[in-house]
Length: 157
Image (cartoon, rainbow, N blue to C red):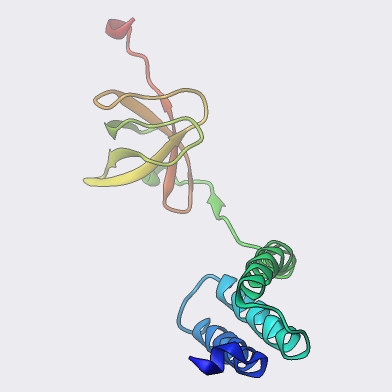
C-alpha cells in the first residue's frame, strides 16, 4: 500500500475513479454520477500539486460533489426541463366518472390508488384525504396519475 502514501499515486487513483464514474453515467441514469466523477478528477488534479492526506481529499471530494450536484443539476434543469403532461380527458377517459378508492388517496402526495376500467391507477387529491373503500370523482389526469375529489353521497352525511 505504499502507492497510497505517495501523492502521485493518490492523484492517479482519483483521476481513474473520476473517469470511471463519468463513463458509468452512460449506464447509471440520473445525471449526478457525472458530477461525482468531475469532482474526483478535480481532487486528483489538486492532490497531484498539493500534498494532502487522504481524509482531506475525501472531504474535498464530498464537498465538491455536493456543490456540483446542486449547481450542475439546477443548470441542467434550465436547459432540459422536465415535461409534465396535463391533458384534458375525453368523456371515455374519466372526467366525472365515479371510481372506487383502493388505497387512501392523499392530499398533494402520491401513494393513493383508484380502480378505473378494471385497473388500479395512482391518484392524488387536491382538497382532502379520501380513505380506502370510499368513492371519488375523477377530475383530470397528469401523466399516469389521476386527480380526484371525494364524492359525498346523501347516505354518508
